[in-house]
Image (cartoon, rainbow, N blue to C red):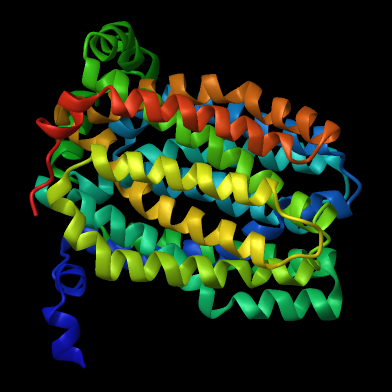
Length: 421
């Protein structure tokens, strides 16, 4: 069995990971497992504590606002403090602290405070990605992000536990337990990663270059970076794609649970079992199909992914009440789409960026995409108050725009970004 796994390209690459990439990938389940356990119930938990759909959408917008502000500083902080230390500090601020707040939340103001702290994770999103890929081979980038997304599916092993707890204890006590467990598991992950990893080569150079500069002095060059981004059609394309899938993911995550339990009348404990199908589909896709897709580059797989995302939303919006089959079909299509899109979306942000300025460019690009996303949380909440199908209709409009943009980007996504198989 061991020899079989080592012969498969997916596991062969996984076992071959070294250095910071191995430290980041191997410790990721300590974050992704607890996060994926509570994720299906976020909006249901908030509704159980008497938050309205608008308030749930507003909390999502608050997170986006603080992400945008954090992203503005993230490049400078990452260069000044280094990838390792920045990741530790802002992982604790952006995940450990909000998990504790969520565990004890009583009303909307607790969720707003947690949303603000959670927005700080955008700093570590920059620094952690630099730690993950800066010392890796360019040809391995998509494989590395496939491993990262794969670790998120390990929660399938524990998903039934969440359903059993909800069936026994109800939503509020179960989510308090899951959030506190998340605090413990994630904090352990952040500490282990800090001591297992080393500062990247680029990180060492940038720390030396910025040693005598203040954070604001480092940020003074942002105007030049901003112009550099918009002078490149390829980076603008990466910007648009990142914004599109950031917005649609935010909407789906925040309103799927409300719609399925409130309108389709699916029992709350069933939400724990939907990730099982999702994880199986993604695992099969990444294990069997993904290695065969590398030769097709970016454009064709991403177009297929957009169509699958749209199909998943149409299925969900047409689902009759008390019919579990349609939400399961939604999960199946969405998982396939995720596998087509996400590793490539993340890879674009690496492959199209000047390595010497990666932290600052990612910082500015993230500020732009998050700033665009801020109104959509409240807008989706407002639409959900009218009809809980409407947020998914909004996603469909955005998917249509994404399809047009990707289809029109033949040159950028075929010639310049062909992935080495």
